[in-house]
Length: 266
Image 1 (cartoon, rainbow, N blue to C red):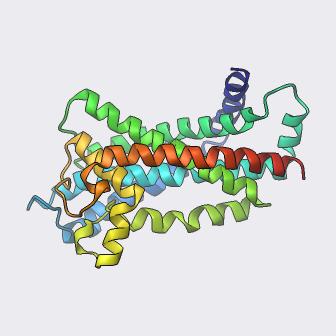
Image 2: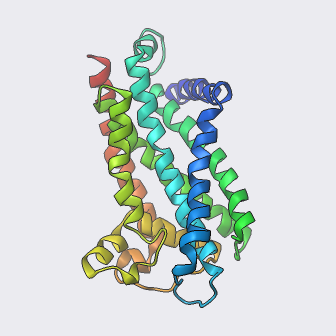
């Protein structure tokens, strides 16, 4: 309980930075908006959505992928923030205070989760402007956003492990994006997987990003949910997504805590 209370204090400290440096939130939002406009109006006319011949359907098909990419990329802030705190000696100050050591990690991942909520709220407005709509009930829509934020929160713990394992913010930034691009683009986020070569299609179908995106399309009633692949992730994307999120947390929470202890003792 102490860790949660102290973690919330650390989270509020991180959130104050958004108020003082609004550029961080602004630029976190501009990039996904650019992706929406580029894919919706430049590449979208050349991409056929499975199960429909309506060219405008691609905009609804696209938004689940953009939302997932946004929270995945947003998780990189966790690693960069922790790396910055390490280099500025802030972690040493926290260690001198009577507070739970886990609070630093809980606070950072919580504040970045709330940052993701703000960015996604802006993205929802952008999506509605370009024609994205949901076609299911309120509970399914809320469940979709819940799944999306759970995935972003789990990704933050991967980023935390990376940020605490390197010695500078620049390295944390580079290391955080190197694996993020193939993870998000080798998926069904922007294009159907049915046109990919067999090997790439298999990788894309089992990619957790594809499962999250497919589950969101199902929960929101967006096009592109017809089975275009095979295997458990395509048949049960919601369950596969939850199992993936649990697996990430089980693996990377202990790794982050161990990396934090090692980094704090340097």
